[in-house]
Length: 230
Length: 230
Image 1 (cartoon, chains in turn orange, red):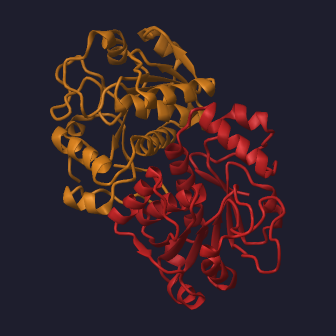
Image 2: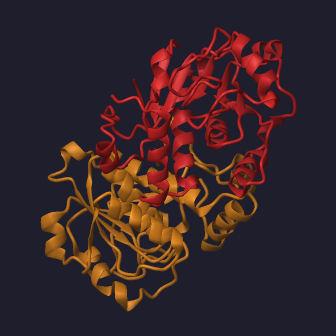
Image 3: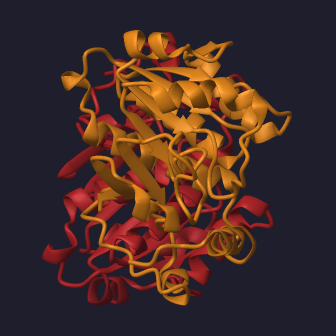
């Protein structure tokens, strides 16, 4: 299976929107759904100490995937709690946030500390930064990044472990170490440095022609599954 | 489980868009996906005489669900062929059509005859008219309705068997008789007249608060399933 560079990931994204005319709403819904499914497969709700999942939401599309994921986790019986420090005026993000609020999903104002995470949550979803990320992390995210680096609670990272270089992986010892990585559309180069328990692929929407164009060589999704274990 | 009147179905739809701020793109993607999943569960591709599925697409949201369903069926290995006689200038529908065309899904110009359907296809997806339908059927759809009424090929109807009254069911003997009915969000009143083999519920996106407001009393979706057998 091909591992994508940052440029290739950006190109594929642009082709999906410009050539294939998908809307962000459509693909984000499918991407976030596949994240929720991957999480439910790895962390079955009846085996967790509690159903509380902290969703850390960043300012871009990775954060949008996280908001969609939170909503689908709620529909599956989890109790997502969202930390979303940099909310934007973009209508899609405002609506995704509104959908969660109207579904009584809790939002917290301040970055939860390590102790708060470990005492309260069974899982953290890292939806802070995606394949467009270029270091360094902005100061607004310092607190939550520090908590994610030091927490003992398992982390599920959406597409890219936040703070990692999209191609070169963890840049120093102070890097987050997710237990689950959910690669979307195709794994990025940094995934070869992933050392967690579970690696899933989600985002079952790439047309065959685009798969061929980029020699993605994706694994087969089984039956109706929205995600596949790598 | 509650069966919805036409007014209730319309009200719930409006609340999802106006109060919960979902976009049509989002919910149509989830609805169409759940239709494709229901179909794959009832008509496993390896048990069909061929993977050819005729998708009959109407001018409204039911047709949009059909276009999304076609795309997901293609991603699961089926060979959908679309008959979409009344294409509109609405950008969402143009884009949904474009996505299918770019994925090399075939569109046919003329309504397939009964013989063409029975010789060529293993299944017909009826995405002509949904819960907003009021009789009579417009003349443009007479030919395809006649074929659907008389074909021996099983029909999977999305939400409402086309031509049926949303509350009172089949209005005369010349009515289609689907083998699978996929009710979306909640079954409508006409579903009590359904006599086919499989009845599924799809569209796992209704917030609990809205379920309670309308006493929907929906069955539990299992695990990560996007649809549930009724």
